[in-house]
Length: 310
Image 1 (cartoon, rainbow, N blue to C red):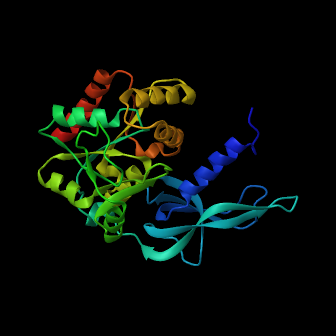
Image 2 (cartoon, rainbow, N blue to C red):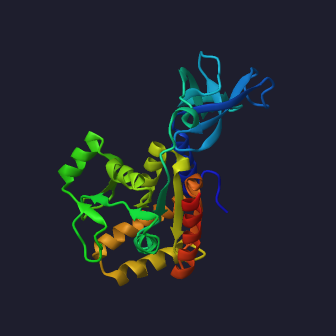
Image 3 (tube, rainbow, N blue to C red):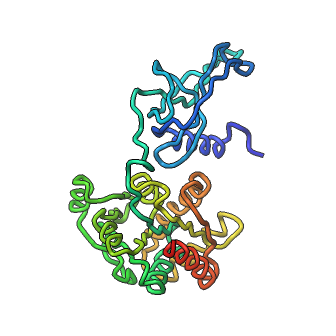
């Protein structure tokens, strides 16, 4: 049994705290006039807040402004209470600002849907996306991935290769709607999507299909809105993380695209990716175990056809 201060529990708590340290919009609020025992004997304003990544959280409201629905709030660490031993306990509170968020549903045009496939290296994201765009070519088109890494055998024309300096220039100029710099000691692994590519596919009346890392998925949701993403999370088979990582290792070795050093790096990143499915469950509409490819494709096809007809 893990104790409350064990490294694993502490790491999860830190991860949750980081995920909540985002600005947001106040959806509703109330005032607690009789705080629980151990808290300061004064009214506390509690709000339901929608963060910029789509999460909804409850938090203490602080600041000089009166709370209003739609108000922009900023996270900060706030002294919650001092316990009997004199230990100062802090919480994430949300500071009220004078700004009112623009109601996206009323003043912004819904841009369209993006089909996103997310999962660790070796899980089959590329295979699924390519099969889907061939199977449903009248409805879907693959968005090219801009990358700074070198071409590899088996890439199947899914990437636009640029230099690292060119990638940085596109990033700084705003040409990329989402990008990620992935940890690597063996290569400069940067990935991103151009806004223009996605807009061009929408203009054709089709659904853009993207293969994303976790950072890319979150960036797309923040830019276009969570409701614009039809998101499929792909997991390898296995009842434990150890078994799932073993499947990924086997698949990466079988495809023969990476060196041993690159596979080791990707497995380290894969461990974090698997944890992300729990930490950021709100970003996924469907989570599928990619054990039987034909079954997975039929499930995805059904969702896509329903969306295309709608």
